[in-house]
Length: 441
Image (tube, rainbow, N blue to C red):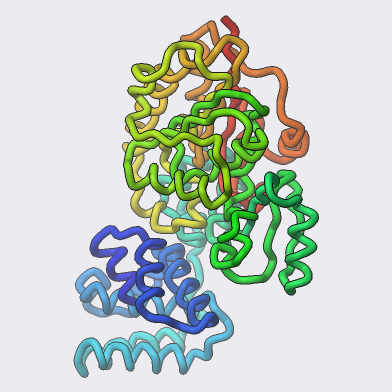
């Protein structure tokens, strides 16, 4: 409840707030899982919960103290979406919290609201006669403006599938550090220790973890044998096509997952300059490289827009621009994102993305490849961005050759504007866009 209230009141990031709360609470593993489910689930289903709660809160949901509002949301989430917590336990727990944090009047109101809901639970249904955007927004709990946008861009069915996927917990995947161990050998070791895992069908270095807890707390992670990374994100380094001896620029590199993956793919032989704007983020990249035993990565701090002042034209074989974006492909990991974003945010970030492309592209040598990637599903930031850049810069074109992994990708994901658009429902991984641009002259 405290985490939810801070997210609502202070605009705190749910993942950071939850991690801080869990560290303070020192819960057993099962309770960590339940707490995580309650926080992310309540935020993910926010407007559906509020829609139904408004029927039962006489003085209006908005007039309640924020912690009371979040206590009711969290309780209704359990009653509507979880099946292993008995309804009486949900009500009792909520009333006890209300008593300890508030007064008799508040606990009485909480008790009354939740018992009224239980008596008429079969009435908690989405009304008839809504437009497609209204129905999807209410049923799958997304802002209506975003649903309308996705219906226009991808069609009604795909828009609904995006929303359903966004409310599904993310799968856990790790990337094997192939400079230290093969995927087969690491999976064999995992199986011996009772961890259920399977190879990723999208990438040769990926492993999907079906059960086994937090991989970042394992000896394998500490010793640099693996990194925690989403499957879609792993495809980016592959698209860059790093080879031993190459000189590569990673423009917006933190926290360093893709940087390290490129270094691993080139057998740690070559030179990667990993740039980030903030010193504390540069430190994250450096720590990743040290943990993974990679010496080919040089970290630098600076605004990516100024990289052309630090490096000479045509001086890189490969450039990765994993651009700042609206992040609409990672809502399942950051459910508060969908409530925080506004249409103007997309306009603003698209301007920056184009500026970055223009400033960085001259640093690529003729024949070299620039990979433009984002973790969003917004066409304005993706295929439209690439199309606009290529129209205005005839000395660049789409790379004709693709990594072998794209054969499987193109069967399911969308080919858009010469790039690949992965939607969250395609592979149960993050929504991502990846395009390969080659310098022709």
